[in-house]
Image (cartoon, rainbow, N blue to C red; front, side):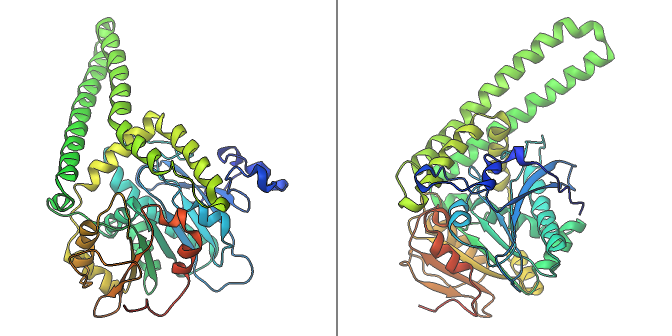
Length: 393
């Protein structure tokens, strides 16, 4: 994997503030201090993605950790990054469409994300000189990991899976998809999947018609006076449609972050609201969000995929938040069942833990909501600490 390290500090809000200290009363939630910017070229289509990395504080034999965040909010770990000193080299990747990684148009964004996750794992191993890497994924990142596992025909994915062998992957706020499994969460989930599927189908159809008009104009420039206004009208309509289709999710996300957090991390929450406002006004972010939501509803994760994890010796720590606003227990249980982790039909209390017969896959319920790694960074850090096994109930 080609590393594109360079001075790209302009991509990081306030990166130059590393030179001085910030008074606690002026804390704006900035977490860039101590991080180095980097760039990664996607082997899927050449898109350039931005990541950041920081070194372990003091000597460490721990494997480097790659962090991948959520669907609408990539910055799933900023409170942890701000308050916890790293005991391993750490890498955080913005997937395409999440600034500062620009949106690169693709109809297969989910597959590109899977390959880009793999590329980040490979780059983390290369730059840290380690033969093994740990992965931590939250929410949408959990689904990207499942898709990455299915893309082993690509060399960067095979490399990444080899680097995860014998280690543990931490997956937070988990779920999966197969068949019409979205119906498990209730009618609203199934209806939302249908609406998004119809919207993306319409968008692709209109884009195809626009592409045909452009080709016609290239072949016969005399058609330009008739075609150009139609193309301009479509671009305006397209932008408006993307904005309207993503507004509901943005409103919900802002509502989730409206309540104050604990004082040491509330500045992070306020900063994330600004990030959401900036990203959600960008048509690239809107399209990335909607295409990802549609792609994950087509995932077919199977018991065969679960067995592949066993064959590779990749252990999973599966974390479910008791008060998750977006992923109910019944949806998390879809993944637990595929992995043969015995769990009850009704949601258990916080602190409950379960594991597969071979001990390779372990599940734990924590006291928190969908933003657990953001709202409870110390507890999240404790989950990341090496341990032989999760406590049994």
